[in-house]
Length: 191
Image 1 (cartoon, rainbow, N blue to C red):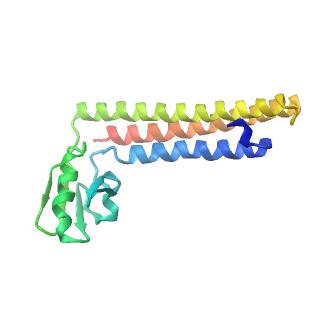
Image 2: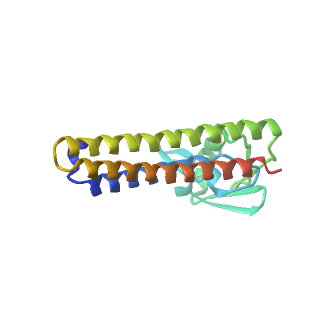
Image 3: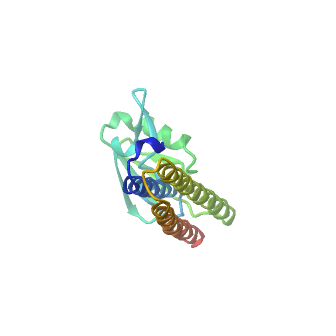
């Protein structure tokens, strides 16, 4: 890992991109956790076995939310309705789909208090995973910076400044991760 970098700027840029990736991954993970409100994000990235290939539902259908507790899925091809419905049933959404031959309807039931707490724990777990991912990026960046100093490509002062920059970057990313997790938990606990 450390050998691919020639200077501190490359290391910091790489760390910044990878930490942003941890944030994006968290947002995508949390998007599929249902909150009692209908949202296309609940099903957009649901994997549907389409002619033997896992395909995201959003690539096979128009997904809309005509009412606060209803999601409609209109397949581009009416022949795909069965395979899409089966994929929704087999998912862990806890929603039973119904269809009229053209459109699949997903009535989003209100969440029970126990289910809200369970989902809040999932959010907390995924938030911690994102923090760990960001910390791993910091570790990799710090190792690369220390190797540059060991190889005499940068001074000790430059190394300490760069390590401080990476730590400051991590602090900001962890703050954003915590806010994203907190906002999702608040959204989950709304009745």
